[in-house]
Image (cartoon, rainbow, N blue to C red; front, side):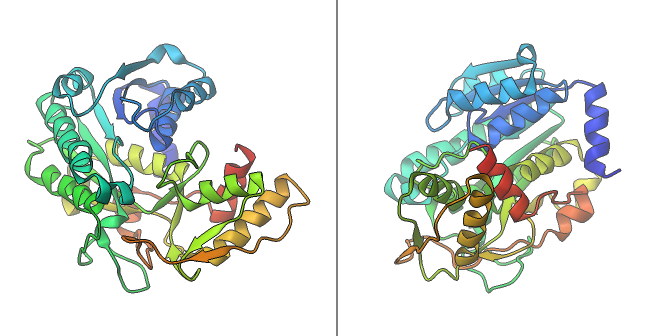
Amino acid sequence: MSRYEDLRSNLSARPFRWVVTGAAGFIGSHLVENLISLNQHVTGIDCFLSGKQKNLDEALANAGNQSSFRLIKGDIRDMEICREACEEADFVLHQAALVSVPRSFEEPHLNNSCNVTGFLNMLISARDANVRSFVFASSAAVYGDQPEGPIREDAPLAPMSPYAVAKRAGELYSQVLSGGIRTAGLRYMNAYGPRQDPSSPYSGVISIWTEQLRKGQPLVIYGDGKTTRDFVFVDDIVQANILAAMADQKTLEGGNIFNIGTGVPTDLDRLLSLIVEAARNVRPGIADVTPRYMPARVGDIMHSRADITLARKTLGYEPLYTLAQGLEKTIIEA
């Protein structure tokens, strides 16, 4: 039995109190769904700036036990909301953020208030409530452009956007303002899965292409198609959050920042082929697709691939889904 399977079994027999920020978002709603299905008590926070009620409705319907979920409709930029949520909590999973590189350039003050001030409010509230651990979403964006190949957590950092700068600021704040509670930052690679909003200006390319393919719309590749990404299915991100939350202090002494991906690079041309193949398994008759190539966007990174050795060794993290498996599950549920 893997460490994750063992944890899930133990959690089912012992309820804790969890806080999930961004609970109506893509990743947040999957965390809510999994925790509720494990008989946990969950308080969600969302101001619905980008989160959607339908995400929560679907998550709770799938989990089958809405009575152990409480939603606070509020903004993490409001300190009192954060303190209310963290009162008597055991674990905090902080996912709320303004997740848009383009928008972080257009509205840097909004990016800072959501992704730095909001982060600080949650961290300080969790610290003052003496929660067991505070796990937060960071991003591979902190690395900036790197040579092609796997990136370790100790690689030089070169953020290329205000969004990436804010994510790095959160990592640093977690190290100097934790007050002794356990903290862990998860540098997500390119997340994808059901409930990812294709209408968002910074949605993952998988959700956008899947929607465009369904509607028969032209598909656009920014760059030459050789850009590589490490695509990680949302259930593996849920796994990483639960493993990190339950890790003890000694486990985290070797470092509290972890890459969360698969370690497998896929270029965009290959990704498009895999999406078309997965879609045909669900809806036969889909024609071949010739994408339209457009110039790369400001802030886009050429290569991003995680070295997940540290997460494997320290947390017991092991990706459960290949890209083909995750795509099939994503498209079936779309």
